[in-house]
Image 1 (cartoon, rainbow, N blue to C red):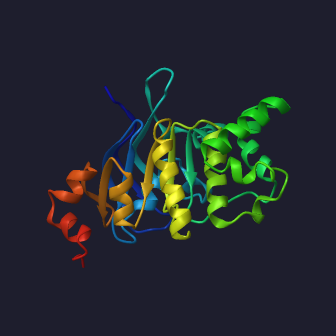
Image 2 (cartoon, rainbow, N blue to C red):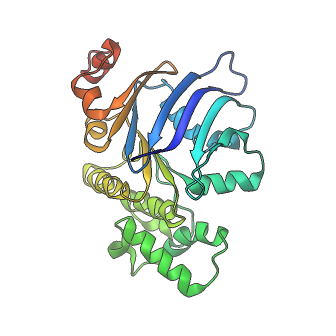
Length: 262
């Protein structure tokens, strides 16, 4: 019996100073070890929703949350509303449990090794041999170990774009998150790097639950188990990906997927 790792319930979000909410009372589940794609036209609220799932918006204070985003505690099985978290430590812990990969690769300006070890050290891991083992495991998990194993001391900024993105995935995977959020992770990459990242995302779902924002319809249909179609801050339709792409319930969904939208 599968279960939800995260549940968005009647969630609204308002940017600082905005006259009205960007997201309006939306609800959706994120099922364990599945890939959920968020699709829709630019400005529909996909990335806003994704970023709310680990409260990255809090970096810019003054926004307003309403409703619930519940995250399952994997040990106790209980759901906890992440919007209630207020302590800095709780938010750091949240972002380790709910990792984020951005459109543009964001490696830290430090060595390949230190990039991956960064979160592990925050978790209190100090032993050199333990760190070495965990860094290697994460780099292998992100399918980049063979390319960087002789360059661990080199600055990560010297890697190619596709390698940097896989390094960022390794950095997130190292701390063993419950969910990984991908915000258009391949839009800045060439087709070969895109293929490598897509293959990696498919492999990762055996261990980690994934939500991905993408503008690429083929990518959504290839990768995801579930698809959410958003428009103007609302969820128009949420269902299994096959159903959304082959037999959507809503005319608006069909128009968007077939390119007759707008």
